[in-house]
Image 1 (cartoon, rainbow, N blue to C red):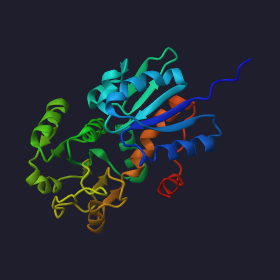
Image 2 (cartoon, helix red, strand yellow):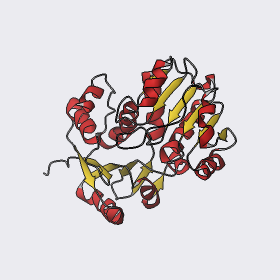
Image 3 (cartoon, rainbow, N blue to C red):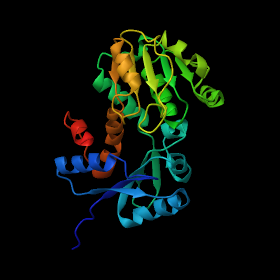
Length: 277
């Protein structure tokens, strides 16, 4: 009688060496005493579909996908959740026994779960949100903020047409603001979100004027390298509640892990320190 197959999962990106996901999933597998492995895979875009289709045959039960494959994953998938379709990208793929690819996007879930854990007093309905950036991450953030009950969203992006495209998809609760006026939209905002790469290690700083930030507003940055960006430092000095982006990475991983390995991991207090080592 043959032993049961050990489930395999992983993360596909290009590049992928920087990813904290293998450490995160490896920690949960050990903590829960589960058989399984989580493998980082650096796959070039031209090879992505071929590699993806072969994984179920190699014992994989699913994968996370990250830059630059999130949009391609959605096109290739056999089944797509409503939220992944709305966001236009997938980050969590599950393979069925017959090799079908099921695509989901858990970024919005991870974003909201991070805010709820890190700032339990946050009330999404307390006022408008201001969102910087209009890429894939912004789509997930907009979708989840509207679901959470934010009454209105001011959206600003360096190229206005990308922001206009999001307004067209998400409706008239989204108001587009020119990038040169982005500082002004902070004055009424109860929630402020940076979804751009500005402020990330190796990228230019976020230069939006922050003097309009309201004391007590919640300010969060999806960038987590460095953990405390200029935006978060200055917002904290101005009396805002700040939440860094590492928690979103952790929380978005929970649904995939549960699907692949059969147990829901707890987001315990020690996990941040483990990822930051």
